[in-house]
Length: 325
Ligand code: BT5
Image 1: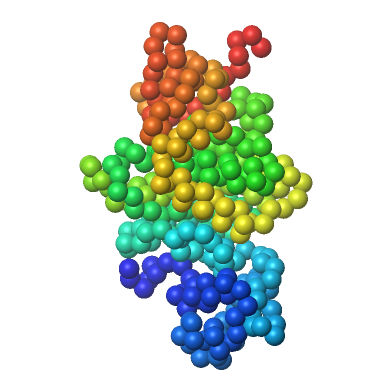
Image 2 (image 1 turned 90 degrees about the vertical axis):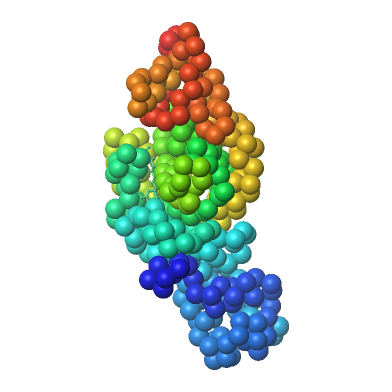
């Protein structure tokens, strides 16, 4: 990878975070483990404190206490899994940054930003990303055919849903790429999160996949588009979430689910708000209306139109009110 697109924290900082995660460790031991001087360790520890990690000096050595704030260091400290963290206070779009990083050859990077200034939804729709949200994109290079890419969107929706539920919010999934709260409204609930998956590949194999997550975490819904019927974790819970913990949970869940995509699709069905509802799906081939009866690997929605069961692979889905209402 060229330096210009070198992704994530510098290797020294990563080694230091890993060494600190193992418990109290003395300055000389840290210097040894990380391969720098004790003076350099002191400078790095100061930088970690600036990044929101309470690094205490005790008789037994350095210990990390509370982690507050949102930074690459806070996310990387204790992150389970192989992902490098590429954090930005502000970026145009984490998907664009992730594509750049992917094109330079990286794998297993999570690009995170506090704010995005040019973020996108599907079909180049605008996505609004004020400071306080969880805006992230995962870069991976699975050895699968491009047709399997939708399963990664579903896996990410499951990962986000589980992380939101752990944060005390009753999230559910709307096919294909939304995480919602509640079941009122024509759109099937208030939108908490949208997912945008992009890829490059040959006919038979993916080269890279970028899975982008826009999760309204500590965001005031008044700052989101009024016609979007959007909500946030802050609005649902009444108090802010620890975003670095949320990112760690999403990434860890996603890492596990990508190893079992069929299991991910089953889990998706369990959390789905779409299955069992009457839906109208606007697909590139025309409108399909009927009852959503299931989802099929790698991500097709099965719609019983009354005459037939149609497999819908792409489109905008509207939840319809039951005829009796
Ligand atoms: C999506 O598109 O739901 C996918 C959104 C993906 C955003 C992430 S953020 C990190 C990464 N970097 C990017 O540049 N993108 C990804 P779609 O289903 O097309 O929904 C788009 C529609 O949602 C818009 O037309 C608005 O009506 C609405 N919308 C915009 N911002 C929103 C927000 N923050 N919360 C809820 N709805 C929003």
